[in-house]
Length: 284
Image 1 (tube, rainbow, N blue to C red):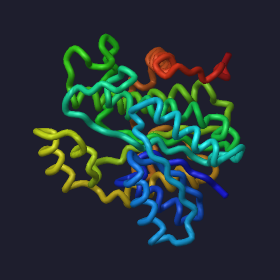
Image 2: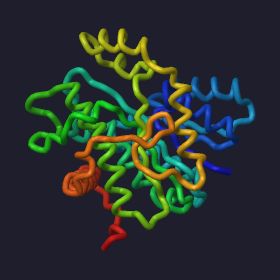
Image 3: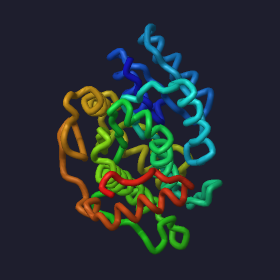
């Protein structure tokens, strides 16, 4: 049976993708922030798909200890079985500077480092499955650059700039992973969901950010519409070419993501911040 791991699978895009993939007969391992949201999401999915094989694990993915704990649980369930796809979908916004227990800015930690670390922990099983790595990106990454002088935005925090940077990091990570391990059989993608009717901008934000998102999301696509692109990238054989997808189409992304220097620098910084090492690149 094909197994797909999806972070942030209790609501929005993640839930819709979990439902679509489970409906195709795939085993879904989802993550959510709390045991309650995980239990509710699993019950709702099984109510619609009684025969689905669904497992949920809970944790705060902005914390590296929680990412590692969830990875341990997934590895325990999987044994040496291959992972067909890992969808790093969990993401968040903070209107005020928030530092994680690991000393990182919240959006950088959740939107980028969590997926980076989980990918590393599950890497051998993804390679074994000739699997696919999919990140939930955003068009907001288009007109930005990595703020190398203060990557955590500690000196002058901007909710928008920190979010945009974290989404650029998703593309840089996918690019560098494919460059380093092009012979691994793994394909990495970033999905641009466009404007979607989710609560991402309402969770623990408040003030202007909360009010702005409450209005803006009314004009977004339904999560079920966006989930179709994830289904396409997981199922299509042979694996689709390209890196950045929207509505099943390979499309343009920020040209800064093609900077080998930036991608390499971010990859190595992320390894240091997570205390891990992916191993030698295949080009060495």
